[in-house]
Length: 216
Image (cartoon, rainbow, N blue to C red; front, side):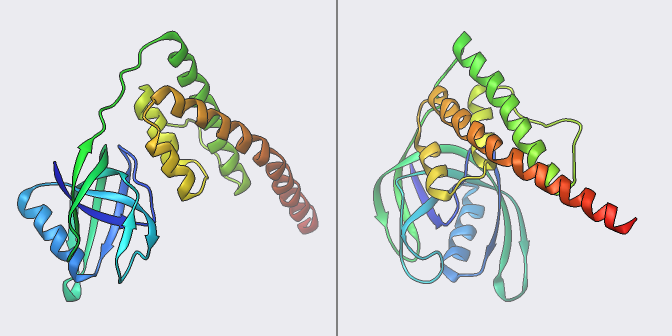
């Protein structure tokens, strides 16, 4: 499969939404091609180089991006909204200018349906909900329920796209082909993040109560 490649400083996961502001001529051409062909492009994290201007070397594993909305702006600029499709691995770069085009192999989702995975799904769901609630509590907000997909693969990608880790960490999760292992890694990360966030919530609450006391 041949795919135009957009190197970015973000990691796109299947099912995630990615808004883009397109202003470089080469990527305006790329988006125009994808719209005309009703075809996706590939989003890859930049390994080296810069997002704007010169050439950038992408990581080999990325995600197909499907255009769902385009808004035309002044001077040919575009606001584009995409959704993540499937993981892929670059096999060979076939074109480097004006934008990268590569032969890619789609990485099929691994089927998982066993008791161990079901247990991981429940644990990851609970930890992710607690992680979200703690982040909200720090800014004095709350929610009644936390939405998350039920399926193991969809849940693991949902968490990976939202967990507070750096881009290299997200890339490692994207490259992990085993859904079960991806969930195990996320459970470890979420456990550490929840432990780190809990005292911050206590401090934030104490500061708010102190401010209320001062006002009275």
